Length: 425
RNA sequence: GGAGAGAUGGCCGAGUCCGGUCGAAGGCGCACGACUCGAAAUCGUGUGUGCUGCAAGGCACCGUGGGUUCAAAUCCCACUCUCUCCGCCA
Image (cartoon, rainbow, N blue to C red; front, top):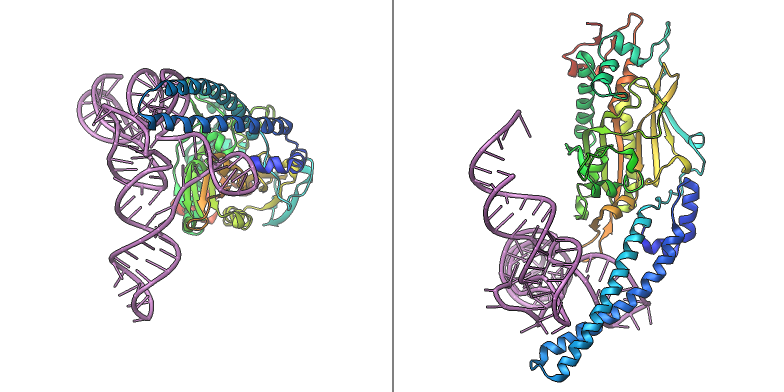
């Protein structure tokens, strides 16, 4: 959410941001209501002031004289007028709140202006794309051949876009989760968090999933609860409505969670394999930082996520999202794209964003820069560190051998009892 | 699921029976000052959030929403959450 004062004073910047991001929003509706609201507010506050003053007089007077009775009658009228005005104000306030929640964050100056993913900028590449002296298989074929991933049965149990892992497949998933959490907690200074996988509407609003993107989430029928689309939601909201101490910052959390996404509007895209699932695992990194440090912290966060791929020996590139591909809430975002041989392309495996104060204002997460000073909104960041299902796909494809087996990356072997290879068992 | 207790400022905690002097005692924490060579201890002063206004100021907020009243932290109603006991349960 943007600051109302900022919107009032900089409508042109807000309008330009919506154009750059390709996001709709009712800026004019906010500006016009704002003027009406301030007039209403002035009137009600003046009336309330009168009522407060006279009520005090009545209280002090003691005796219930004719004059007092007259004042009471007058105040009765004032009060009913106040009630009417308060009603109007509440209405306009909630309308403005809704409209304000619908405005996208302002892109940072460093974000290249552009229309879609074509205009994203490659920042760097890492690693070698593996060369095969045979035709590399897609990960779903590798998984089926090794009898470690079973999509038909997942379809039977639940439906499309669900996966069922067996044996070393299940173990690989678990090994990756442990490896990533161990790395980020031991090497990068994150505190491990294991959050609820269901959250309420206030949490979904805090991080920006609601009200605009309700159709992307699964809601538990008959409740106010949503299945989390990412651990970003519960972990960021962990400090909702809190005032943090300056010396606590930066706060860094690493959380494993399952993630649930309706994938509305993705019909026909990535229908095979692990790339686009309704449920997938992810280790998420979340930071709460001081405003002037957030862009540096984004670089570090991205590096922390990259380290996972480096240690796994997976080739990737870092893309800086252009304004049109940035999305609603971030001010700046890097995507990590991992090399997938069967696709012959790089695919997103992590997304690292600086939301500046956009989420913090929605969720009311503040800190006190100095004792006695006014509170300020923190900046929030998060990034996948990294998506587990897509990592499994990348490992299967990048480490596949001619005989159908898959080499286990060295850093994962401790999680496999020292074994170095997945073979058909 | 049944019975009961509670929700007040950064934290603890009074006030709620008997409505007005309560944005709210007291304590802790914190900041500043004094004392000290320095520190601790002690003493003094200050210390909620938001909206609005050029400012002085004004308004709102005692879990949430409604109601009664000239006036509500305080009375009434509904809801949410937390805790305790019982039942059930991984």
